Image (cartoon, rainbow, N blue to C red; front, side):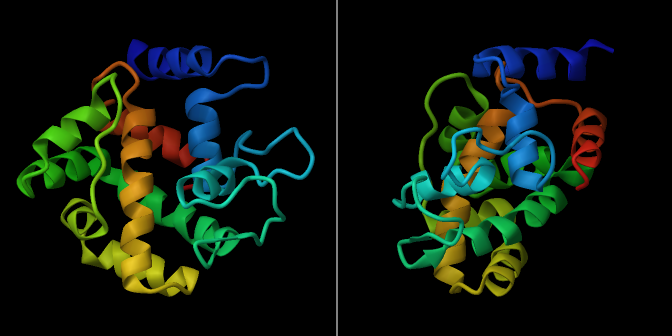
Length: 184
């Protein structure tokens, strides 16, 4: 069963450096387990680092650092379980299909492909993940629905790209096993 092993191996190698990286860090940071922490003192680590960078906050503040007025730690805490839920049971394929059905084929193809990711707006990401996911993030993170949609518009392309380093979607069973490994 080369699929998952190859995926893990290529992502780990892609990340470089001796401290893990790749998919393990991506899912570990997103889903709250694994090796997603930062080894450099003072950094947020994992998903919080990614959110800080994506939302305009730095990774140099404390875990509660606000980015664009948001508590990054609260958003990260709410986002991990939501992403696990979205990825389970063929969710990655469903997100890509949702993007394509919403007229975002070019964007979805760029996320899965090996080049740079095309951006989507907060409004557009609703067609990818659904209004329920936006509502859940907003409620659990204590942010507005528009802010939640904007966060997902930044994170979803990164997640899809990170899970498809070779330009192909992993098998649903392989991804479910990987999500389960990180407690999702």
